[in-house]
Amino acid sequence: MKRRLLYFLLGIAAALSGCIKGNDDATPVIQPQGKFTGQYYRVHRNNTTQVKDTIKANLTLDLTSNTFTITGDTSKHAGSKGTFNYNQSYIEWIDSTVPVGTNSLDLPKYHLHGLYQYVYNGSSLEFAASTYPIDTLIYIYKLKK
Image 1 (cartoon, one colour):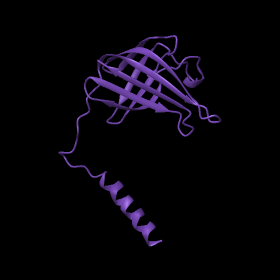
Image 2: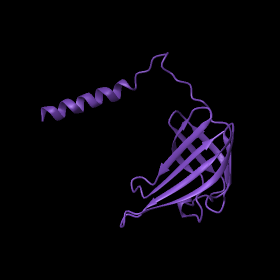
Image 3: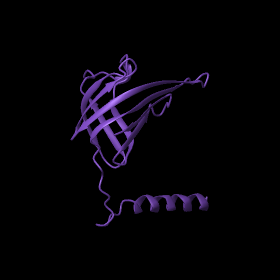
Image 4: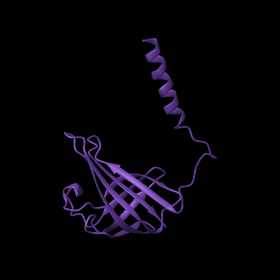
């Protein structure tokens, strides 16, 4: 019991220490902008058989200030456009071609819509999302300028 309490208190201390900010620890976020091309992957895992099937498509993503347009292999991924917001860890795509009140997962083709974790280094932009907590679908984008 004491060990659990110790680990709990250490976890709380570690979490709270991340909330303390100094003036010199603010890392600027590089704004993703430009024309990116690369691969889109949709990985589906069947819960019953545990078999995975993958759809792959070549896409082009154009980013300007806070708008995006996605084109390319629209036989497997919907061409779309809209706005986006980002911070250090997440990028949120708001696809204006998804009808209001519609779940983008219910559409015939996948639209770039929703919240994704991302990594951007100035030339490579990678982002991914899954259908948490079910995790039967994973969407991965690996793009380069």
